[in-house]
Image (cartoon, rainbow, N blue to C red; front, side, top):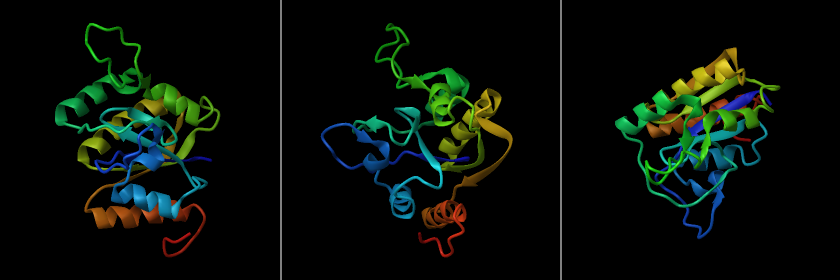
Length: 180
């Protein structure tokens, strides 16, 4: 599979008591669109960008949390690039061994660069898309995203974003009307 969807996390989350895959935890309109349009992840590999967890595969089990991506945090994520671990250590005095970095996660999604992505959709608000663009540069340098990859940015009013996400997902299989 040569398509990658990077979707911003969602403030709306399902309240399961344990960790569950991000695909099931997030419950905002874009995530609902993804689950209805592409419930089996056959048309694209799904990943997410979170203020708490950073960049991860959408199958990653996550706990319920409440964190917002601020301008300051987005700038720190951009500077940290693909090698900064998320979530950050609970204390600056603790070793930086918590979490995982985006480079390790994208490597796993591409079988360590053996299957680089040729088509990417970046979906989210302005700050999320800025961080996604910065990560994309690192992913290209790593060989996990092709230099000539088509990159689609889906951003704007939520209704339009849902339509564009559905269209991007469905174009992989030639489905018309945005319905599987």
